[in-house]
Image (cartoon, rainbow, N blue to C red; front, side, top):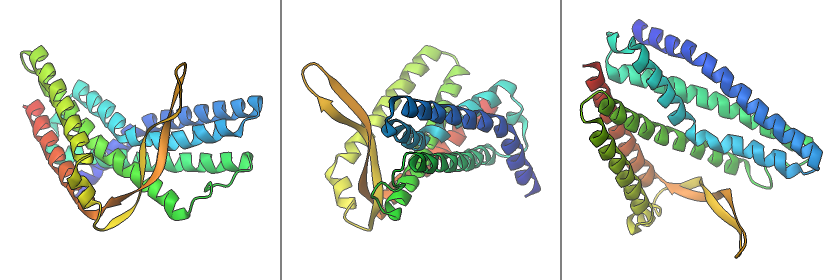
Length: 257
């Protein structure tokens, strides 16, 4: 237990510098939005940037784990640890999740400040449960995409350490395309709609939305709309996430060898 606590503490300390850079970047982007709002007298600019800073956290864990694992491969100290690759990977993922939670909390405060500065209601005529659904959906997507990022990182890392790199890279790209296609097929299938009928709860749908389209001009925006999810779907995606985690761990074992 002490060794696991020590690993968590080590991963936390290593992540502090990256987290500080993250906060600095968020603050700069928010201040740019504030300056543009004051200059153009358009409150929508600051509010849009503030909301976007929250939504983009769906990519936080995946990006953080990619750079963190890449750094571990370079220094190679990680692979000499007496702890199993499963524990090592879980520790990094847990710290990344905590950092993501702290970062999105900071962005929520920035959004609240932005709303107060431009005299707009914080919830934008939505309920507190709608706001909670947005945050839980973002964190859920961050976890799920983060696990997929680890899996494909491990595939490419193994390919990079073996012969016939180009062929392995091509196979991995094909696998990536296949998995994305399977996800799209499942989401648009009757089975997905059937699962939605049982144990549904509030969630949000995050994607691109065409807000203006004509022959000369097309404008696309990041759309966040209220939706629903269900317990059976949550179980399906949780099962996929668990399988992906253990497949990633097996790939990392190959790197240790």
